[in-house]
Image 1 (cartoon, helix red, strand yellow):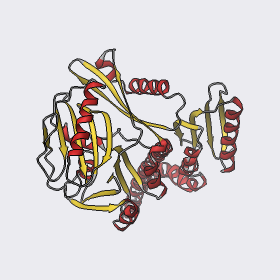
Image 2 (cartoon, rainbow, N blue to C red):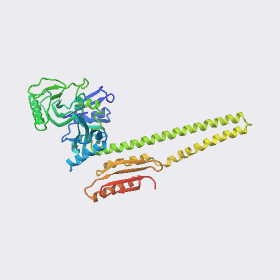
Image 3 (tube, rainbow, N blue to C red):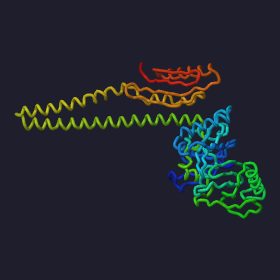
Image 4 (spheres, helix red, strand yellow):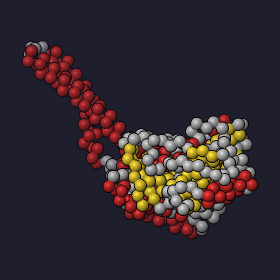
Length: 433
């Protein structure tokens, strides 16, 4: 869905990545009711993000080396954000690596948490977010999908009376603007606004704009524009707004470009670990029962043969002895499995530990770097992360509260490592003594 001015445009595809589906247009205050009526659970949303900043970081080192090193790219981005926003809290960002004509750079989109209130409201109402994107991302992806050159353009999106202007270089948006018009038809005032943006891009941003692309359902003749213009061809299926449809069609291309609240990212991360734990446990149970069924089938088959042999060859003690020996060997194989089945209910379910720690993301000063599980004997979880705090006293208090919270949930701490200076910690916990 796309929030455009005071209206929300919603597209619900019949199947994922499909061009066929239902389009809706509602006022923003009616959005939740529509989603509930249509039984929508997962949402991808685009909106005009106020205060969004764009960073372009040129890369001087070997291009092929950095392209293969995602952790290095992430480290460069984090370092630059800390340099430029030393006092900003709850920053969300996304980035992508670009290489063209012998140059390489990283484009970073940064937004503060206070400008993501819409996404937080959706999360509070129980919706799962596939992604939250600046409104220009799906449009630029569509416009540049066949563009092999780094063309500089101005893209104008007209949504009823609301206008969105984007200054682009290739797939990168350098500047975004939003303003209200007098009607859905472009007027001379709109032309003035567009020309002012063109002049600003040329004089202040040093960008050579080649053309103006207009994303609007109804075409019209315009006079007075300082650059050539053309209307973007819209998919036939986009009856109301092209943006929600593009979110569905370009979901894979937009992956990792989401701008989501940090708390939700931590929640998704822990949920992923829990999901992996569930899959591992499920696979273990499937293999266990498959082996048990196989061995029990062998046991039943051999027992059946034994009875047949007993009835057919009563005088053959040697044959009976041989068959008994076979049964004995199978019983030795089955006995450990049966004993394990009897004991399995006495071992705590490892998933409980994962669920109990899933709310650690609510601790603001806490960030989790990794969660490792060991289910060989007693289920144990090892958590590693970092505690932030303006003072050592605040860090120590947060660490003590973390341990107390784990103990109150019925978990035991087997091992802990705590570096008050750096804020790094490692806790191994589980059930039992």
